[in-house]
Image (tube, rainbow, N blue to C red; front, top):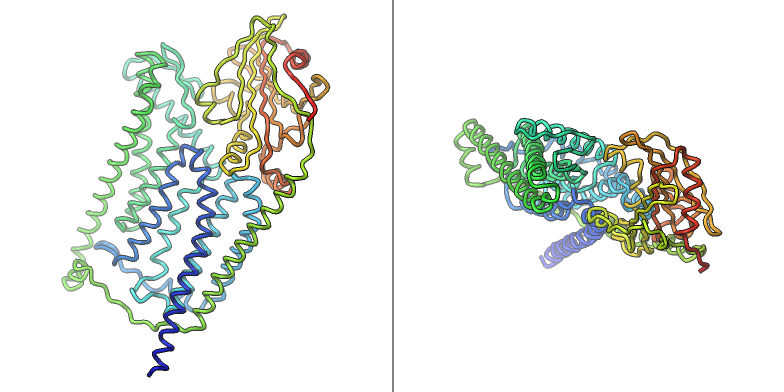
Length: 564
């Protein structure tokens, strides 16, 4: 008897140790993922809701553990579970594959912290590792279900729900932003016309009598669209709605988000038309919060209605005896064996192996990038020093919206005219090397901005993309990407460049525009480099060559160079 009791106690101790190791291993992987995505959640306003998602996932998991499914939900069959009952080899293969590709994912993510592809790969790898390890752990505890009757399928949606916090692929997000912006602007102009307020649409700008109201990305509706999608999916799981009703909940939420955003944009534009464009600043935040709360409450009420309708419909179909079991919350626990020590040891070793692999991948990644940063060559230091002798020179405070978005360590905006009467505008931003993830995200996001995107958004038309030109200035050469834009029959020559500190001013920075350039950045160990952003626009020259000659003359006056 003592021998049997000792064996049982040994098995119990092994089970406890197994679950502790699983929690530690999965906790580290999830903490690393949340840390990486957190920098994006903090920067992108439309993804601020991401900080709530891990807690909502934890709540949904806890809800699944606490009790049976409420009235209105069919009991989960064991069909899907039985498919994998004897497929451990597939589970081990999936676990090994995700663990292996985690290494290159982490390596490329370090140089590209806002690359949506690696963000999705990282999230999917972590989710698969979690589900497979939990599945094997539950199986080693006695079968496909735990002693409480829970199946691994109970945790699939709560864990996969985390994907709503992963930033969307850039192509999809850009399409949605552009589509929502056009629809929002068009609908707002129509509503204003119905209210008797004349309004004209110029791209993403609404012209009213008192000025122009710009509808930027934040006002496009993408923020409320994505947040409402997250809330709709959460309510569907919280109330355990059937699949069709979950889909209906999502559709209702997205429609509410779109309608409420039109109300918000119409209100702000109406205020601008009546009180001036400057009055928008007073109404902007209160209107946004009010509309968000109204949308949330409306969606909550709709979800409750869907849940109540589902439960009432199913309650009439459940036989009395079974209905009583549902109402009382009784569930039939399945007695399963306690598991064997060998499978417990295997799962415990898998958790230890995942921990060791995480440490190895992280150490290798940090070694690679530190080695490249320590061997960075020094180049000539250059800076901007405006020509104070020009009486037409005026320094302008960077608009708050741009300053907050760029978050540069120093910035300059200036306007002036030259002797020939040409009008010049300059933007200059400087970022020091970034040794924190948040700073690296800021630096990488600044690379995504450029006149080819920003100027068309305010109604300008690109006439020519003249490629990269090199302009001499005080002993160095500065590379620019030259564009020609037109607006109201006026031509604007734009010279634009981003420069990383190691390569200097004569080489444009790798802007990570495609997969090949992102891979090249990782191989080059480009992570913490400081950088400069310089954009100079001139109106007046009759052709691009003349504009380039005039630029060279201006650079001789405003560029200062010194050896480090």
